[in-house]
Length: 91
View (cartoon, one colour):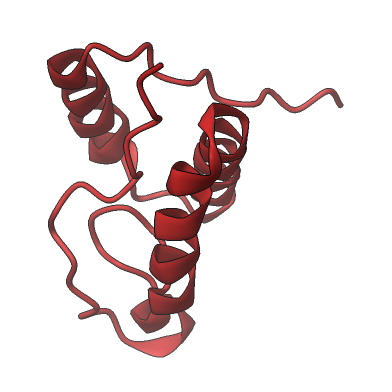
């Protein structure tokens, strides 16, 4: 069984000012979340998919990360893994 790829897309820069400066400009994760992502994707497919869903939700709230989804989909396709679907707001 193939594991879920990490949500990191290899940009890893924290250049913004203010509170957004703690989030990577590529994937929106904080440095702490990047460490958590490594453990989540190693734990299993459900855990990895749940963590990717968290990243989707975080990006929906923060905005400015529209490029990430296409880059992550490309990464999943390259590894032969279906990309997890974004969680839709039920409201």
